[in-house]
Image 1: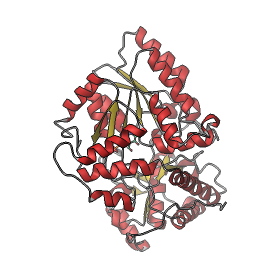
Image 2: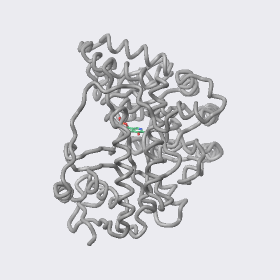
Image 3: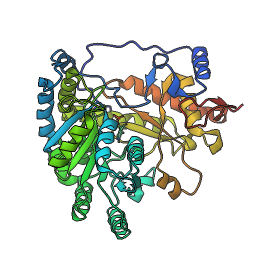
Image 4: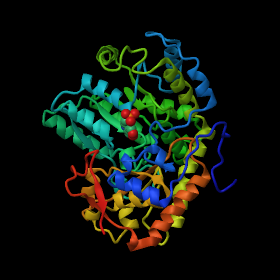
Length: 460
Ligand SMILES: Cc1ncc(COP(=O)(O)O)c(C=O)c1O
């Protein structure tokens, strides 16, 4: 076998990209206040900001767009998608939504009341925001290994079953209500680490015993299923569909951003078994997403989702996808030697996470090594990446300075091995520059660092 991932497709249509000159890149970065999020996409050569909605669709998906039935209610694409949803996820009820966070908004609006507690392995940012918006309190209960950045264990995204049991028992004793319990696969806010089937079964058993509905945040369920197949010996002989059926068979419902493993640019799903909950969801979504047979999507989008979900569980696609991410992680590790701690391990399905603090050790925390690395990547190679969210519990577990992580999220079926070799080469150059890479600080008069319009400047 070759030592690099073989693409299970060939290229039929291309989108030109260009790399600006160094002087142009410097000017663009300055104009945006050193915030790569605010760059114009056309000024970027390789965009690794997110894997969400940035996927390339197949010719079969594009052909599906022409089969869009744009009737207001009951389009044929709704039924096509329904068949696929039934086959993969198997819940009694489902509705489409325009993306993952709208599924969250609708479900939590129906289920969550002020003061409620909602556990998860690690809540994603929008999940947290939506739950808190309804007065809920979010609790992260991932295993301790989730906070070890370099160990080899394949399932560092797991829920800590003992912590979960203890948390529920104590919450109940304190008279608290837990309207639903969750787990997120893969665990994006914890370096995209995978979750094992055994762990999902154990999580489901705890929730069931305590009579708590169990919902899976399933954006990257197919990548997670492939990692289960690779690393969980009892699942080695199962197909991805069988693993998916086993995963969702443990749960009472799921929500999902289709912008990940449905291989589309827009879409989402919300599924559940409970009849009464389904009724309330359909009613609640009417005023935001629209009627439950289209959920904020055009008929053609529903069709692309139906076809993309099936392509997303194709084993040759997933083998390539997972190998591609690992390939990038391994090349960066090689290129960034002697910096031992550059790459968080193991690489996830959708992204490579970098420890910017370890790569730029001359920068103290207040000179924002993460932002400094993002700026350096754009300046050196026209590459955009994003800040990674490091869970609060993790920062507390590492009593030294909080970590500064950067996420290289990989759009599906978009970039080639040459692009990845280039990314690794650029990162190697940045590490080799050492102390010449400047820190970044908030510019005088800027809104605070978390604001979308925050402006920064290099520390001279
Ligand atoms: C784990 C997880 N949940 C939910 C969402 C929200 O999905 P969307 O961006 O489609 O609203 C995301 C998006 O990145 C995610 O990674």
